[in-house]
Image (cartoon, rainbow, N blue to C red; front, top):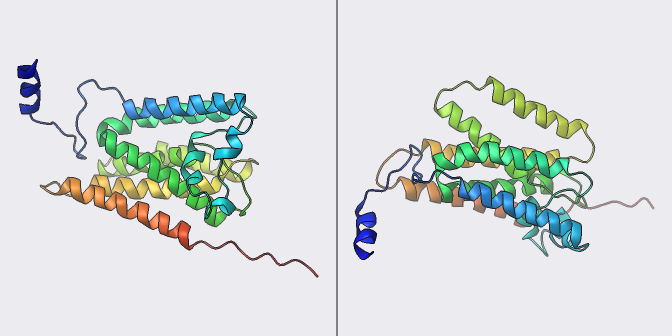
Amino acid sequence: MDCFNQQRKAQPAYRTSFGGRVDPGGKPVVTITIMAVCAVAYILQLLVPEFTRTFFYAPVLTDSQPWRMLTAAFLHSQGSPLHIAFNLYALWFLGSSLEPLFGRTRFALLYLISALGGSVGVLYLADPVTAVVGASGAVFGLFGALFVVIRQRRGELRSLLILVAANLVLGFVVPGIAWQAHVGGLLAGAACAAILAYTPRGKHRTAIQFAGLAGIALLLIAAAVLWQAPVRIIPG
């Protein structure tokens, strides 16, 4: 057994063109885990009345309970199962393509930073008392990442642009959809993917990539810290 472990350690770590470690099993473990967490959270939302109220996000809660900016990305609307069904399908479609390219750690950070970007979009573009739930912001971040990957590889972008544009338009015309999260997540995900895709290969590529992702996360956190609720003028 010890000889087997030593042999595994001696084998070179094969990496993708984006620096991610190649998974011999080929399973998108992070994607599956996120989907499972969303599914379990949805069941808890249905069974435990206070679960949604404990973890949803609204801009007015940013200062006192900032973790909601991430936890809301694992909750979904209880009014219709279509909300979670669409997000899980999109997550599987995008994650099974992007996770093998970026590797597990980079993909997990991409998802979380995109989710944070979606909440920052709500923070700055929505009414401060707007309550939001859903993985849509993070999913749009994955759409943004896929756009960067295809562009970097000089692939055909028309179909993806039409798909993203159609979903963005739906967010503006269909009531109850937080288009602000879509915009914030899309921009954050594209920025993360640009760092992962365009960092030159070399000895320090991994360090530069993670430093870049940390920089984006810090910018989003700074934006949340600096946000101030608009002053409401009550007619007298």
